[in-house]
Image 1 (cartoon, rainbow, N blue to C red):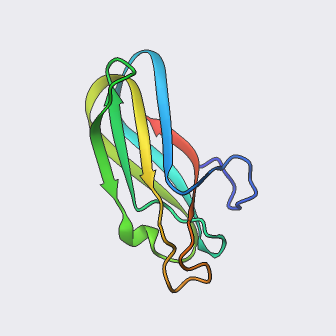
Image 2 (image 1 turned 90 degrees about the vertical axis):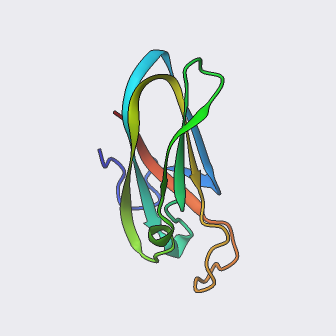
Length: 129
């Protein structure tokens, strides 16, 4: 993994203004034990890694319940330029679908030249193991 280049202009990054929500659905249930994500931190451009990520699972593809979460407020509020690799370990189980929700930094911290604005989340991959 680690596909996107270290620039916000690389089309491999999927950008979200504010919070991120992604649904992954399979034809048949898949055994899943963790979810790994790579986020971009490019705070000069208002791109911050999320404050936290929640994973929801569904046995039928319609009704979801929370199966994992991760909090990274300190990491998300750190200024700079880097890729942030996050891993959420789950109790191994078979799921037909998962929903990945990431909470954006909002508002952007006072020490930033875009203080008070809405941050963006850039993710280049979601790896499901």
